[in-house]
Image 1 (tube, rainbow, N blue to C red):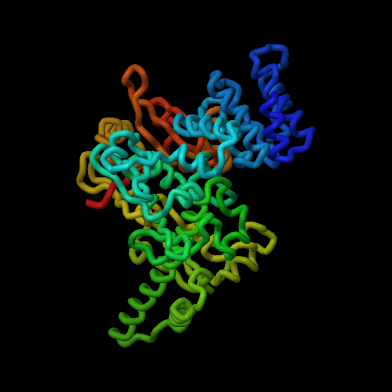
Image 2 (image 1 turned 90 degrees about the horizontal axis):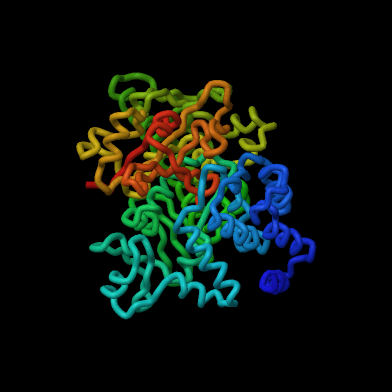
Length: 495
């Protein structure tokens, strides 16, 4: 209690908030006392001050079945959330989920560091060790962790491979701090966040994420995909550029690195779609001229607008496979799009005028519209330089596949070298992206990162990460995978 009092005084927290924190720690539920009527009742009383704007109780039942270690870390995270060290969304959970093992270790270390009064520089040095040589760093560092040699950072990808980062230690810690986590914002980009998490959780593919960040000579951060056209420039703290920061609820809460990748991807997909529309129109126009047919003036107007626009991230026209009930200026066939459905070109202002009472649509710009409406997980993987699977141990896989027992067996037995995301089935009578299993945090049509691991009996266990709280992990059995999972996306490094 003495430490908490001093800590709160240092952070200038009002006494009533201190009492709320202390009540959380001495709660009958956390002490194992059965005097509370129900775990939900005790939990509601002790966490309501911390919950803030999150009102969905089922998302806070994650403490019901926690073991002692998890209860302990939950209380510490509550204190850190109160002192603005981390978003209160870190407390969001589900009764049959648990904190990620690596996150738990880092949170314990960080809490102790704060308790010991360490400075920011000392905390950075605590989490990223410095070694005299690269060989020693490789020997003493776990796979997936960062180490420093001669002011340069390295990621240990495996016992054989390392990756040299293009950012400094301070910049790395600004982007991906010790309490590295995110919670999805208002936008439906779970596919993107799940793809990023699946790579981040892999010591090898984590390099593909970190390769997007480069520190410039003038102390800026340049964020770009390896083969992409889009580029973001921001300060060394990793804050969103001003034109993005005006839409705070559209991005994750949590680490700045993830926010910047969200912002970069929306720009990348916007540029890709602009080019796609223009190229299709050019092809149609060329064919019309060759066949002595009249060219489509509306399509020519669209192409010229996209080509001459000064703000490529806010085009006048957008493409979608959704019928928005406004004028379709152009229809693109599935063959032209290489998709299963036809697509339509709209004037974006027409969509916003039609849905002027919809706060979501009327307040965003086209690039945010694209990230929410038109992205998919394989596009996300390709942006980072990965590819779908073709002719490998997994089989002839080029995109998301319906999960079958045979495919699940192949994935389970496959060697390392792949990253996975899954989409949960939609159940009849349950609205899209509402819980179909609230205890496990499974939401219909929602995307999750997937890891295939072994339990204590060497049996396969399937570990999911819900973008609503990346610090939590959900374990499914084979039977549960086949019951709840609709499709799986698989990617690997380009061969």
